[in-house]
Amino acid sequence: MRRYSVVIPIYNRPDEIKELLESLTKQTYRNFDVVVVEDGSSIKCEEIVNSFKEQLDISYYFKENTGQGFSRNYGYERSKGDYFIVFDSDCIIPPNYFEELEKALNEKFLDAYGGPDKSHPSFTDVQKAISYSMTSLFTTGGIRGNKKSVGVFHPRSFNMGISRRVFEKTSGYIITRMGEDIEFSIRIINSGFKSGLVENAFVYHKRRTNFGHFFKQLHFFGRARINIYRFFPSELKPIHFMPAAFTLFCAFTILSAIFSSSVFFICSGFLLLYSLLILIDSTVKNKSLKIGFLSIAAVFTQLTGYGIGFLTELKRELFKEKK
Image (cartoon, rainbow, N blue to C red):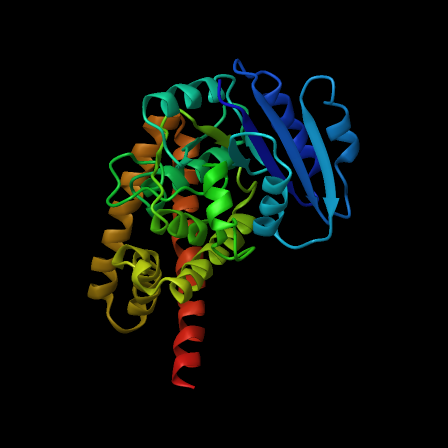
């Protein structure tokens, strides 16, 4: 039986980690320990972590704030297992997660893996709409949880695992925020390690609870993609420009109302058709018309947030090169 170590970096979110730890106590596969790394929080979760000491093999560490990437490295260095797993603190883990992961790695070993995320029945309608937006094939979010994605699968750190050997060879994260997980995944693959998706090792990911926070998160993701370009220029693909193109198209549609009603009618027709597809797809998948309409708002928030962040950071990069 493979020994796993779960590393959880956390910053000012004690309520979230309680739900995560509760879900870990219900695992059918028990050969794992948990390392909680408090990243300089002003609202500590030590008391909550200690309340699970009789149910889990768990350790708590408090350190100065250095960001999530370096906090994961800190946790890796103190882990006991053969295989390290990272979860975001806003995840809930299904009871058979480790059982499914162990089965998958025994059938086809991966040096690094990532798993998809899904919406939990207890989530609010807004959270379910955001989850739909981030995982739907009608948006860029469907790429990372899709086994048929083009190219090698790049794990994301909300639900990601690496072997001890990967950490020893790569030394973990070299940037702590702004695309740190993408950079790490690329470097793992470039080092010759095998990476892939474990489809049944999914988590319930809460993400953000309102569209304002969701927009800020995706704006940061868009900036992060340009930051990855600074490390690996060849990793900036045409697909990464799609949210920016969508954002510019939306802006053009609004402006067209001023100078050409026919152009506005055509452009708004495309956006209306796109919205209708999202409405139908989300309504069927979530069995809720309300979530279907909220999903339209979530998709537009996701794409424009990412697009504006992408264009903002791209402008900085181009201006820097020109200067």
